[in-house]
Image (cartoon, rainbow over all chains, first blue to last red; front, side):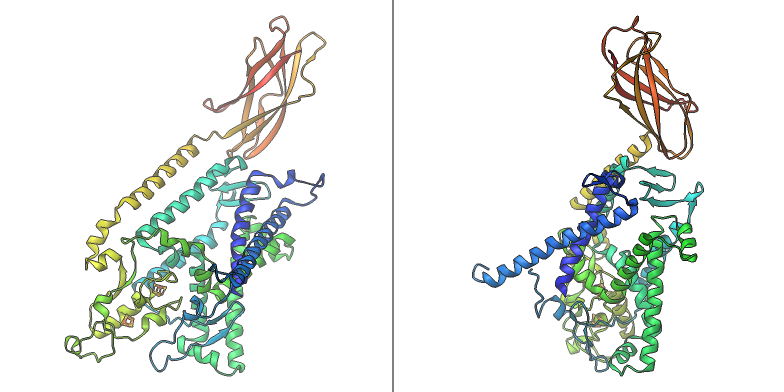
Length: 79
Length: 484
Ligand code: SF4
Ligand code: SF4
């Protein structure tokens, strides 16, 4: 389960950073989705945005873990 | 390091049952996160423990208290994300002031570097929320379940009514604190009094409810369950701190030259004759350690510098009638050279700390300067591109602009708008323009020129927005004026 920590935690930090940078430059009420303005409150968009960033980060961390694991079992020779 | 959980990894070697017969027994707890030896830190009293308590109280007083303070009839500190404005006492920050927040982050980071280079993980041991909440939660645990031995017995014994009662009480208290923490956290983003009345009326919005619960859950999980694992496996600072350490950094150090060879002996025994050092191998330093390491093995990255082992060992030294400080704050150089504190303090000023210090001072000064010089008024000129110029019935040429005026201070302003850049420009707008504190107002402005005075072509003009009541405040903003 340490792996879960390794995947969820760094992505949480990165998600927080991405959220901060993204929304300090962009006003969520200016965002459009498929040409339609988002019919959500700013707080709703902040929250959804944060979890989106987090999920993306987690996906990346999970892939890294997965690739590394494969590399270690497959290529013991090249250490 | 790869992502697999290996036996014999840091986790597995983290905890060995501490020496004496009564204490022999580390409980293996199959937790959600990993198989780890549950750590039962022993409570400790002493100088550093007292300081830790003071800091826990101080940081929590600030954290829980700040959202309740008011300033100009609004919360003193409020990160109003919904309105995209941050209030910090007399200061109102807008998205345009992003640079100040960045500056603040850089300052925090540099301070952390400086502190780390000088005094190691002071932040971890005394101020990090993870440590502070763990401290609070452990205090509750201690009060409810008793001291270290009682806790171990309780966990090993049958899950009877007493067990159930104590566990329920402990978790109830933990959850209560966690909820209060979550509530306070959200209180930094929504005025806390409004939030409180919403909670009382059971009418919290979905997002606020969600974030309160989310933060509470994180607090409860991190301080109640994860504890030292957060520092060991999750904290990036714990990993890169070694880059900021050098041989003159203050760390928790066991004086091996003095302590070894360790061994049990009676109080009255003659150390010289027995050929033993000062360490009586009582294992207290290991028992009190919240991360469950043995500091006598040297500095390890798990050590959060909480100094609990110093307090613990000093008690033992007092009992034995030996000098204190077998474990103490010291630097690698000082211990190696058998030097005292004076030597250490002289080495505090060295190239690394001077550079960190100079950078820090420079950035703080620049930021304060910029804050001081920041004009409390911002103007954006937006012009209608489609309609360049139009002619009025009496033959004058008009251009229409929209001025977005932002009053970033907290009091209302009365403003006048003027224009220059071509002969005889007239500004037609309802003047003076009133802009309430910390608001933005869009004003439509018509600028008019007489073709008799101004030739065809386009002109660079400037709008002058000035405060009627404050002669020193004037903002100029460029635009273009077209004579057909
Ligand atoms: S507390 Fe002090 S005397 Fe006891 S084992 Fe640790 S270093 Fe030795
Ligand atoms: S070794 Fe000492 S200072 Fe380090 S974490 Fe353990 S008790 Fe705290």
